[in-house]
Image 1 (cartoon, rainbow, N blue to C red):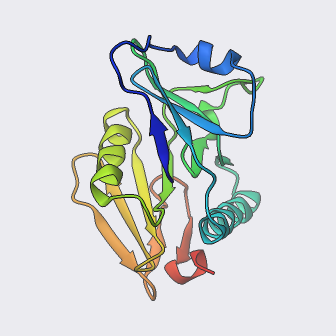
Image 2: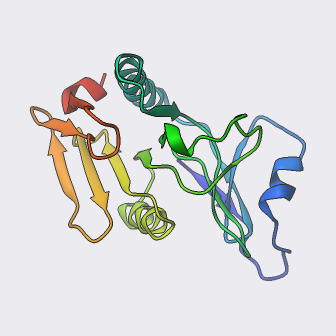
Length: 187
C-alpha cells in the first residue's frame, strides 16, 4: 500500500480523536506516532486476497463463534503520540468486544492483524510494521505475500514461520479451530 506522510517537525502532532473528527474523503488514513499517513487504494489482487481471507474466517466464525473479523478498522495501538493502524484483516476475540460496539477506533490492539504486501511495499517497511504490531501487543501478525504466495506468521518471542501453497495455515491459537490451505487465500 503506497503511503505519503509529512514527517517534518514543523507539522503538529495529531491525536486519534482529531483524526476521527476529520472530514471524510475518499482516502484512508493511519496515524503513526501522531503523524497522519494517507493510504492509497489497494490493487485488485490485494482486494481479492483480503476478501477471500475475510470470508474464510467469517464462515468459520459462523460455525464456531469466537469473536469478530474486520477489515479497514482503525485500532488505537499507542497514545502520546497516538498511533492508529488499520490492518487489511483483523480479528478481535469476543470477550474483548465492548457492548455496544465502538463507533470510532477500537481502543487497543486486535488479536490478529493481517497485512497483504503490496507490490511497491518494501520488505523492510513491512517488517517495521510487524514489529510495531507485536510491540503494541498484537499476539499474531500475518503477512500475506502475493508474489510468492505465502503467509508468514509472527508472534511475540518466536521466530516467524512461513507457510506456502500446499501448507495448512493454522491460526487456532488466536481463532480457535481455524485452519485453511494457504492456496485458498489466493485467487
